[in-house]
Image (cartoon, rainbow, N blue to C red; front, side, top):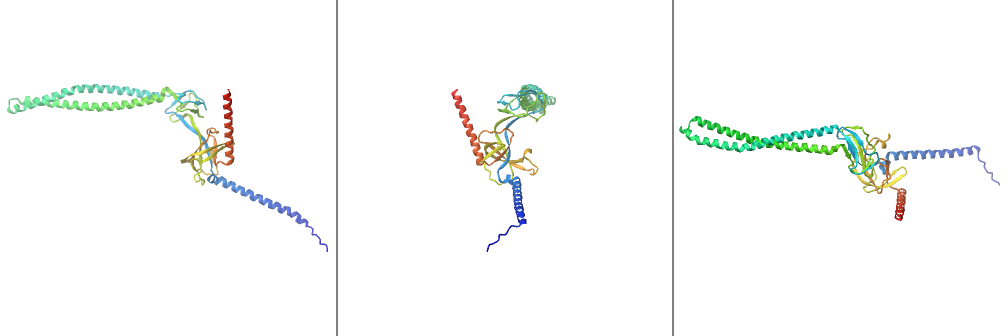
Amino acid sequence: MRKLRQRPRSDTLQNQPRRQNRAMGRFIYLLLLAGLMIGISNYVWGDRIFLRADGLILRERTHVAATSIVRIEEVAVRRGQRVSQGDLLLKIGSSELLDRIADYSTRNAELAEREAALRTRENLVTELLPLAEQRKTQTQRAVKELEGPAKEGVVTSQRFEEATIAAYAAKTEFVRLSAEKSGLAKEINALRAARGHSAEALDNLEQHYREGIITAAKSGSIGEQVPSVGEVFKAGDPILSVISGDPYVLAYLPPSYLFQLDQGMAVTVQSGRITALGFIAEILPVSQLVPPEFQNTFKPDQTFQLVRVEFEGSSPFPTSANVLVTRPGLKEKLWVWIERLTGATKEAENAVAQSKL
């Protein structure tokens, strides 16, 4: 007997695509929800689990700051200019420093004059002291010689009294001159010390001022701040800076990171498409707030631990650039190695070309 095939119902055919679309929509929704949760978790806690630290490219800076109210009279450098140690940077004028130099010079002259007068008096007292001592001895001897005859009545009491008064006066003069000599010696020593301090202060001021000439203490390049002629700075204000030394990264780590971090560990420094290899040079035992450019509204302000990262080779980043410090992956290592190989090949080609010339 022939079996009849059951035909599908028209309403069933219409419901099948709806079920498939509903299942696909639910899958996409769950996938997006999972991706969103993973993204939020990575944004909030990812820095604690994986090494991913913001950092700044820095170099050592030697700051030139005003020590008093100064006026810029001449500027011999421009922003970014290379300078060598001892090169002229600025010429300044400071009426305050000049007044202080004049005051110290006047004080030194007054102290020298006072010391000269005291030494003259000391020399005079030194010459009078032996004479006073001799007179004291003579008058005391005369009193002793007249003491016996005065008792026997051979010498009048008036003469004995005059001898006694003369002896007392001679002794008093000797004591006074001795005390004066001692006091003069102490005062001269104090004046000598005051003159030494004043002369040292004057010498330091003159060396510091050096007629207003400011030179570079180290070789390097001029920073971004360069003053203009006529500009006035008060004490403590930075005038300019000289950037020197090799560049390094100051990275900011969250205070309770969970990944392992050791000194000497290899890291990758990235900024846009530029990548370079480095290593953890020092884990600094200090923390501070991150700079404003690394702060965001979703993370509260907190202190981050500082880490110094140095480059294995030369730095391809400009000073003050924002970078990201991560663990190097295979892709980054291969990319850096290719760049190094390309650079070494170019250097070899240049060397061969120069040798042919």
